[in-house]
Length: 194
Length: 194
DNA sequence: AATGATAAATGAACGACGTTAAGTTAACGT
DNA sequence: ACGTTAACTTAACGTCGTTCATTTATCATT
Image (cartoon, rainbow over all chains, first blue to last red; front, side, top):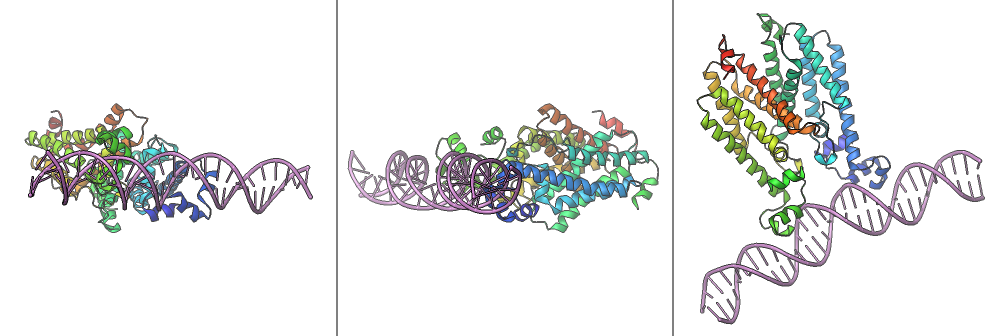
């Protein structure tokens, strides 16, 4: 199903396509999902779980280095988005017809992803970055920037995957440099080097 | 038409709806647009022109105060997006079925909007902000952040308009504070106060 | 003023798609 | 062996985008 989304490059996938991918007829799908919207909502949920798991394993592996996790976690986030553009759009910009009213960050899976970002930022603050900053506010700005870069990257099909990745990475790097610049003293330059 | 988009909250508007809004039958529309996609592309173009004009008049009025323009211009941008959510989504996140491959910043109208942002940043740099910064890179990050905040704001219909506006404004304010913090010396605090 | 040419709009019809309803087949407990 | 249940299929309906043939309106020409 995720493959189907990727292949079609659009979540406006005919039910007959998913049906024949599963090996049955369209009406048979209604035994498992109330309607097409429910199917797409389930796929969206699955996408959130995948993204969360990726970021969770990364955060466990790097919990000793919050600044590094923030960068690598953002890279992983961006890579997930660029590798699964249609799924990502379904997750974060679903059509209103799906009746999804909650923002991605308030739902359970999205909320947990946001928590991972927050703990990363808290860890950075504990190490002297972002002194006195309102981290909730900063986290939302940070997420907005990465999300926005990814979305803008989706738009121009002129760019190939490598160029999209570079553009997104530059945004993340700029953000990281800005965080690094908030630490008083020369340590910022030193920390940027690892 | 723009009203129709807003009323439906979706650019998946039946042609019969636009037809009766204009006062004719669906096939009559094909005399003016090759197909539905062409119609939506025209609306998108119109949206870009409106946004550009808003930002242009603002930039002319405030060209003496680039820092202020950057803030007010971003506010205007966000307000445009929140006032016309469906149109904005059509402009910056059109469905692939429309065959719009160019990114919004490379097309002529989008490019000009980006230029306004860039000149604002150049003006700031001339006043001592963002010393030695790569402004193209910074501009893309800035745009990404505002765009991302707007997009995330669209998602949760739980928030009312005022709350969405506050969330977006906080992102912009955070960005502005970060720019203000790049100017060496005490002048940053002083400039923030106007 | 009458007529013929041109443009534009209409009604009917087709194809794609989501969805529902009725009918058919298969599996299973008794 | 029979009735029940579950799952699937075929057929059909409604909506929507789009096309085509026909009609209506416009307007220059004589």
